[in-house]
Image (cartoon, rainbow, N blue to C red):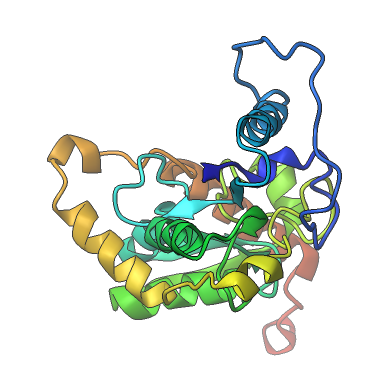
Amino acid sequence: VLISSVSVYPDLSKKGLTETDEVGTIDDPTTEVMSNTSYGPLKVLCENAAEKAMPGRVTNLRPGLIVGPEDPTDRFSYWPLRVRAGGEVLVPGEITDPVQWIDARDLGEFAIHCIEQKIVGLFNCCGPTSPADIAELVYGCKAVSGGDAEFTWVPASFCAEQGLSPWGHLPVWAPGEGEVAGINTVDCSKAIAAGMRSRSLADTVRDLYAWWDAQPDERRARVRAGMPREQETKSLAAWHESQKAAEGPEPPDREAGN
């Protein structure tokens, strides 16, 4: 079993990517420089090397965002932690923008399942098995945290104007259209048919909170992904200001005029 990545697909603008879609190539297969352009093709070379060593006996799992307790990147964790902190939360795009993630434990269980059942081949493993959107993610986090977060939805175009990048300042999420629109619509039906399962968002978030709260103070001092609160506050203020400007000036008070 090889844990590969959906980064093998060079065209992440395409929605509904399947295991048969084109994968990336690299001019210098000996490079040890890891970058956005080399990572995916190097994963492809790993897949090829495994298949060459064990023809017909390899299971290549291609996950997207792997999440849950012990995640060192905080890319998914940003949302549960930010929502639990409460207050006004900037949420990007449309409420129906799709998002994908897989709990590390679910990925591990599927890998073991494939070994035990001698299942081989290529499998996209992005999860969850029931399609989710960004609204489900943030409201689900709020339900588990029991906090007082209030969500302000800011269009993707305005986020771009503010320099807020998908999967950077705004992890997990990507706009519904554009260069990375397909990153959260990867087709995982083959893995689901082979037995991949996903636990509920509530279980993942609840366990993430328990793990996070047990970490040392220095680990919890700064979330490693997403945008700093100052930047969020600044962008929210700019959004509200733009809305006021769009509404135009207040109508005159007729009684005061009289």
